[in-house]
Length: 400
Ligand code: T4K
Picture 1 (cartoon, rainbow, N blue to C red):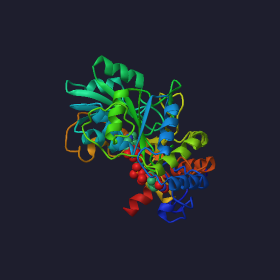
Picture 2: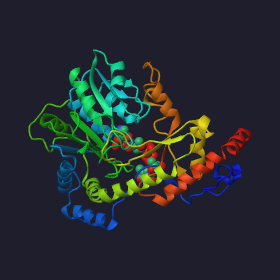
Picture 3: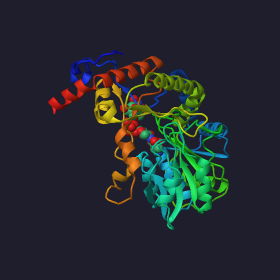
Picture 4: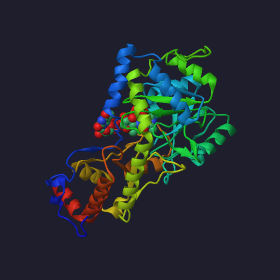
């Protein structure tokens, strides 16, 4: 880190060599040991059994029930399908309240289940839905709330459960990002009627592609097994439709190894997160979000917010400069679900906080591909960018 401004040409966006040799993406990308994976695959080949409730999947679901402290875990091919299957299994009709400040799959799972998403705003400080935001959009056609847990934090699940109970609503959670988080030491997974997790490659626990649904409700679990399709069913329950959402043995093999590595991956994330917290202090106009409402975070994402007037550059320009340096910062969830296909031409009332967050937040890399040292170097780079913001702004104007 330098204490004086640098010329714009010292940054990769304007011709210098990138500070980081290889592109570093946002997302966890923790790969298990290849030797162990080879052994698991050998077992699959010896058994000649690829799919449909194989021994690895049965073992994975058993271990996950213990991990989440729930009665049922139903593994699926991804969280988006899991959310859609769950909306079917809950036999919902009408409107479902969900935040617009989320990955588009949250809203699309509601539409794909033949329901109508009602977008509510989020709390500007913690990025999650809260009771005032729910009160602003509830009406007689709303049948459920789908809370979304973001970044390594959660909404307040107990307050939302109570609100739903008072209004006779169903409640479930999109916890795609929240595996391993705990609220007052209780694992996320057991809140609401059910919760859905993602095991995408970018998540802290991965099956390369996949996810799971957790519930303590036997009837919902049977409907979900009937939808997946029918293996694992203990009582036949009528289902609206069958989805091919099976998890293969190869995916279960990756997930089992990933679960074994979970404690060390979590510890690694915690150290990187703390390195960012230290390094990103005292940058005017930049704030880093701390995990909210959780006693334990998985540190799934590192999220920062920019006040461009004070920082000296817009969020988008900062992201462009970082990406040129091979730090592949993202701007999740720009422009917001309510402004994305197929929702953009409908009116959803005021979503002021959502729009502010969509315009000002960005995410930095965390996970397997970075170390505490690289987190410190990324923080130093952002300090340098801030100190050189006048030079960078001037160069940007000339190059336009
Ligand atoms: N609800 C919420 C709140 C969610 O955040 C998500 C997904 C869902 C529901 C739905 O869960 P799934 O149906 O996906 O299970 C990503 C992920 O695809 C998505 O899972 C995630 N949330 C979302 C927030 O981000 P992208 O388009 O940013 O990821 P992608 O594939 O471009 O990967 C990020 C970077 O990682 C890239 O620069 C490339 C690199 N990468 C990626 C993969 C897959 C690798 O280096 N290796 C890899 O194998 O959406």
